Each structure stands twice: as C-alpha cells, then as structure tokens.
Image 1 (cartoon, one colour):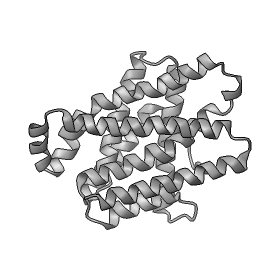
Image 2: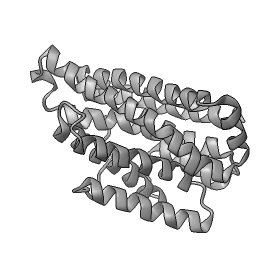
Image 3: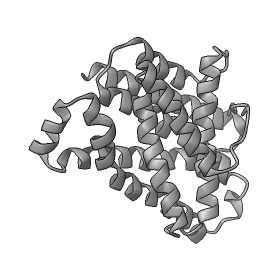
Amino acid sequence: MSKIPFLWQMQTIEQVLHLMAQRADAWEKTGDQRCTFLRCYNLMSSNMAQAIHEGQFHDPSWISTLMLRFAEYYFEALGHYECQAEHTSAVWRHAHNATVQTKLHVLQNLLLGVNAHINYDLPLSLYDCLHEEWATLSAAQKQLRQDDHEKVNQIIASTIDAVQDTVVEPQSPIMAVVDRVMGRMDEWLLSQLISSWRNEVWNVAVRLLDAGDSTEREQIRQEQEQRVIDRAEGLIAAF
C-alpha cells in the first residue's frame, strides 16, 4: 500500500482546530466553497475534543492519536494539491477540482469532502494507528477499538443540527424551509449516511490489517480509492 509522505505531524488537537478555523476563514473570505466541509469538520472535531476530555472513550489516548492522524491526511493532501504535487491523492484531487471549478450546491460541497475524508482517509488512518498492535490484540481488545470508532458516530449525529444551522442554511436559505418541514428527519438522514460510511470503513480497515502483504494492501487501497471517486461522481450527478 502506498503511503502519503507527511510533511509535518500535528502535535495537539488544539493545533488542528486552530488550523481548521484559520483555513476556513481564509476560504470564506475569498468565496472558496471548500470552507463548507472544513467548517463542518471543525465543528465535529471540536465536539470530538470535548468527548475525549469528558472521558467518553475506552482509550482516549488512542482516539486522540487517530484524530490527529486523520487530520494529517486531510492537510497533507491539501498541501500536495496546492503545490500541484504529482503524488496528490486521486481522491482529493477529484474532490478539490469539483469544488473549486464547479458551482455546486452547499450539500454537494459538504458531502464531497465528507466522502473523501471518511471513505478514503479514515481507513488509511485506522490502519496507521492499528497495524503495529493488531496481531497482539485479543478479540475483546479489538472490539473496544471498534466501539471507540463507533462512538464517534454518536458525536457526529449530535453535531449535524449545528452544521445545518451554522454552515448549510446560511449558504442555502431554502434548507431552513426543508428543516422546518422535515423536522429532524433531514439531520437523521445525513447522520445515517455518515454512520453507514463509517461502518463500511471499519471493514475496509480490517481488510487492510488482515492483508497478507503490501501488494494485497495496495490492491485494497486502490479498490477503495476508485469506490470513493465513483461515489463522488454520483454526488455531483445527483443534484
């Protein structure tokens, strides 16, 4: 499996949150639609940090490391894209190009980022944070890791309403009408979509961890890469 050469490593979650807010502010000032996903990501990451602080995870140290690794993949891909580096991931090149070059609905901008980050970056992040210990973990310990992964689904679900109120509706007032008509149904649907993607991602990560060698892992990565790009094309065509 090919590995992204990280240009830096973020040391703290606070550093990540600051960088997210800083970049989102800059994009919003220039009308760059990529601020939509990053505002959402920042909100969810802030709630994740609060959940870690409150002790909601079995292993807060591990989930903090995973959260940092996850963010590194996002910012590393962004750095490569902005430098037009040849090893920019195909998934993020496609997502950034679509968002920058095309006038999309706010939900498309949001979901293109969510699709790329969750469905591509997250299984790689999980692999990075699990592969050294995976073979030595008992079935019960592996389940605790999965439980912490699934706990994030609840945190995301609790954040969706704030995302709609503070990120989506200001860009698309009609969504406020949708929210009034559907009640919490629209937030529930988005939450269910993201949760289903994250459940799929755990299975992809396990396949990577159980792969016999690097050739098999790279094949799995390439398959997931194409799946994510195909899903992005579907999101673009759906509106």
